[in-house]
Each structure stands twice: as C-alpha cells, then as structure tokens.
Length: 555
Picture 1: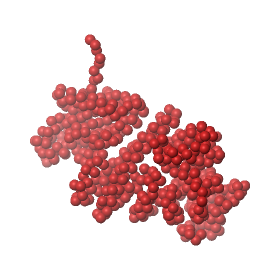
Picture 2: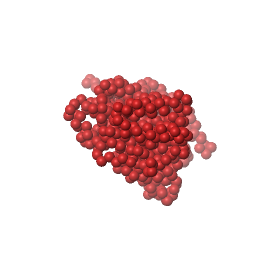
Picture 3: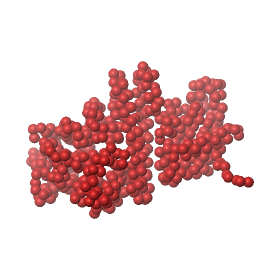
Picture 4: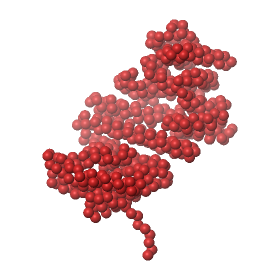
C-alpha cells in the first residue's frame, strides 16, 4: 500500500507467510459473514503453527504484521457517518462516568435509546463500569465474578455495552491463550466494522495491542507503533492519542527521551478530554523532568511541573470517585475485597507525589537566579519537609483525611500522637542552630526506623511532630511510644565533638472511626492528642500521656 509505512525488513517471515498474513488481514473486513468463522480459524491456524513449534518470535511477528496491515487498510477508508460507538468508547479512558462528569450528558444521550426500551440497562452499564474499574485496580477475581454474572445478560443487540463487555473479557483472558483472544478480537472486529465503521475497528486493534504484554517485549513493537502513529496522527483523535501515548510509555531503551518529548509536544495539543488525568500527569511530569536539565528551557520545565501537579490532584479526585462508585455499586464483600487494591493505588499516588516533589526541588536548585521568584510555588507544591525528610503540614491538609478514610473502612483503630522535644530552645542557645538542625534530622531518622512504614510522621512545627498510628490498640500504642521515649532519653547526639542529650514528651488519643466522618472530627482528635501533650509537659516532661475523655457525672 503506497501510503503505508512498511516494516517488512524487520521481520523474518518467509515471503509466502508474509503475503498470506497480509491477505487475511484485509479479507477479514470484506468477506461475507458466513465465511467469517472459516477465516478466523485460518488466522488462528497460522498462529498455532508457530505456537506449537515453540517459535514465539515468529508468532509475535505474524500478529504484528496482521494488525499492522489491518490498520493500514482501515486508515485508507474514511467513514462518512458519525459513529456513536466511537464517541462512546471515549468513556473507557474516564470511567466511572458520574453525574458531574463532562461525559455524563453525552453518554446518557448515546445510551438513551437502550434505557427507554429497558430501564434495567442502566444497572448493566453500572456493573460494566464496575467490572472495568476492578480490572484497572487489579481486582481480577471481582472482575471475573461480574463477567460471569453479565455474560447471559449482554448481547450484540446493544452494541455499545456489548463492545465494552467484550473488551473487558479480552483483558481477563490468560496471556498465553492466543486462540481465544484472537477469536474474540476478530469476531468483534468484524461486527463493529460492518456496523460502526473503520475508526471503531482501529480503536479495538489498539486495545488488543495494548493488552498483548508478550508483544511489548518484541523489538518489532516499537516499529509497529511508530508506523501506526504516522498513519493516524494527522487525525488528532482518540485513536492517534492512544497509539501516541502507548509509544510514549515504552522504555527509554526503545524510545529515546528526545522522541518522547516530540510525542509530548504533539499530544498536549489534543483536546483535554481525550487523554485522562493519569496520562496527562505522566506526560507533563516527564517534560518537566527532562527540560529541567536545559537552562534555556527552565521556565518551560517549571510550567510542566505545575501542570503535572494539577493533574496529580485530578488523579486524587478520580481515586476518591472510584472508591465511592465501587462502594455504591458493589456487594459489601466485593467492596471489602476491593479496598486492598484501592489502598495500593492510593500508596502509588503518594509515592509518585514524593518523587514529583523531589524532582521539582532538584530542578529549582539548578537555577539560583530563579529561586527567589519561584520559592512560593515550591512551598505550595512540596509535601515533604526539606530539613528532616518527614511529611509536612501540607501533606496533612491534602492526604491525611483520605488515608484515614481508607483505614476507617477496614474498621481500623487509629491513634493520633503529638510529640515535642523538651527544652529544645536550650540546644539552639547553648550550642547553635546548626546543632539543633542536626538533632532534628537525627531524631527524624530514628522515628522513621522505629515506626512502621504504614504510619505517618509529620513535622508539625519547629520541634513538634504529629504521628498517626494505624491498626493499634491504645495499650500497644502506649508501649511503642514509651519505648521510643526511652530510646531518645538514652540517645547521645554528637555535634562538633560535643555530646547533646534531649528528651521527648508524647500525648496521644486513640479511637475507631465510622465510615461517616469529616475533617473536623480528625482535627478534633489531633487537638485531643495536643491536650495530652500539654499535660505531659505540665507534669514533668519526658513522659507519655493519653487523653482521657471527661465523663458526664451529675453528682
């Protein structure tokens, strides 16, 4: 094909095998329906030969050539109709579709003809979104359970839900079950092509390629994506964005940073509703980090980091939306099982936040002339205390309430602790402020070693700390705090050959949270811990005190 970018030189299929594969790739769209099963079996047989021979390289090459030729063929066809299904498929990148979503009205309009015929379709769509979210979270058992439930309820009379369901089914199939995966994909491809046109068919091929993990490790995959991107990128639509982002996500060994920056510059020109917040966050973070090494691009780097921060907040919001949606549309058992996967996503975002902030700070340090101007922006973005490496108060404002919300859903006991170094001003006065900084850093290191990774330690003020202990009863929390107090009491800090001794006081308050609570309750618990700390200070310091709620005694 004259306008197709050939990559035949990269493959080792014989000329006969190559021609046969390309012919089948075109025939799948032109044969009558009664011959479809025969052609699908022929395609599967051509793959099975290499599979049974243990020749994975030729198997992958055959698949790459087949789908490459299919997209080359489809890209030459321009459909004159406006495909509703193609617009509907955009929601896959933005599930769940809630009432406040920009896609809500459009999705409702597309599906309204089905809703009017059968109101139960609404519940089917909710379950499909739930199934899709379970797959995204990695809760495969939950997704398979929903697939089993929906299998008898969804057929091709509702092509929109049927296509979404088939995509989910494909992703759930074992990676090594090439025959079933191909059979499902080709039958769906044929049906969608004849009812909705080439754009939807290209989208399905892209989804198939993105889910084929084994193919991604083959050298031909980059060439395949580059060719498909060249074919589609002038359209600037969902398909070209999906291919471009998949190419961008490849490792630096396959796609150089310079190539990724070129893709970034193209993808950020797309309408913002095509790519989702996770993808846009990743794109802008890469650009910020890459451009930070080039002095002439410093301001562009900062702007990219700021955009990354914006979409990072959107990611937090979406995760909260997913949590609410799964809870509303799942059985109690399924929701309980899904919490583990939701927490894993939450921790991933937390880690990403720390990495992003570290890169942002390092970037600022490369240009001292810009620091004064951008210092306030750095403070707003940073969630980590620069001296101690602990979380700072901004972390509490942004993340703490969400963490407590997740923990409360598991019925965990949560212990709020306020700690303060005793007579710390004397360290600064008797030695120097650098000595005080050294003590704070060493003490923070001891805290990170002593407490669990799941606990949260925040530098709350100068020498004051807020610690959140999850899943600990009051007695266990007291033992841990008392043990750490004794450790600090015995610790000798060395600064400029001088020995410095300090002590620490703790106040704490433990309670269970119900699923319904607000930030005022959390702040009240912190205040109770602070009151207990004041009691520890007033009764001699270097001790651990619990907050005891007053009892109502009329006498």
